[in-house]
Image (tube, rainbow, N blue to C red; front, side, top):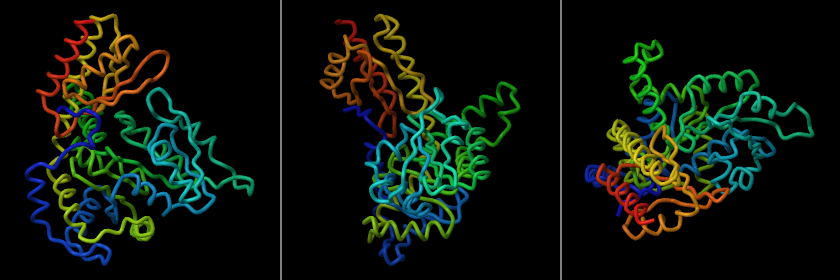
Length: 367
């Protein structure tokens, strides 16, 4: 089976399984699991923070970040389509009594700075207190511009607000920024002379935020877990919230060892996922050009390809892929169009891409 539904479906590599087998463990609730402590210290050093805490999921680490920096009746500015608002079951409101102020995105997936500024509430008892600006990078696989992140940070500082990044796919964003910088160097563009190691780019992205959540179980390929990074004081609060949310784990070093292996060995290979996503999109575009543009992929920044499928072919295409063991996410979208989401990852190779494209060509040819 070729599973393109998400990069959460990856299985541990043999080397990661060995790291799990060899992990030293203790009781993390007592703070004495050496593998968890090693993972947290390594991540904090890597990304330029004072401290980190291991969490069971990105949903949990995002909620811990908000609960640690907001009080009841505070407000968080978020994007309409971002995970913290749309895909986390309303946790900030239900469990934290934090009001989300959701804003629409521009075409490039940013939220315009003027929209953010106008949404900040005055210091008045009638209003929730705006306390934090939440970003997401990548967002739907799209990388937010580096200068935009700096501008959001400057706005937040000027208005006395905190900033949080849902960086579930932080290293995918950093990998694409790195690629663009290398391309800039080759083109003689001075912008390309910046450091383009994806680890340092990730640290640069993180420098604009007070807290950052990083998922270990998406593109990095660990089986479970996320990290929340911030100051010592914020992470101390987050640990208390983690316990309250049921996230205190015992011999969690078995999971932390997988996360540490991912950070040490799976960052550079993200470029392969991005290359394969581009190959997939290009192949789908070529197929679409030969069938009245009933298949219309969007050019991906990273490892996620969104494809608009004409309703006339959508059902048969989905059924044909399923029958041939190719799994994708698909939903009815708008105006008679269906949308597929293809995600490349650790368990997708070049043969999977070629087989998917050949399958779609055959289905279209029998139309």
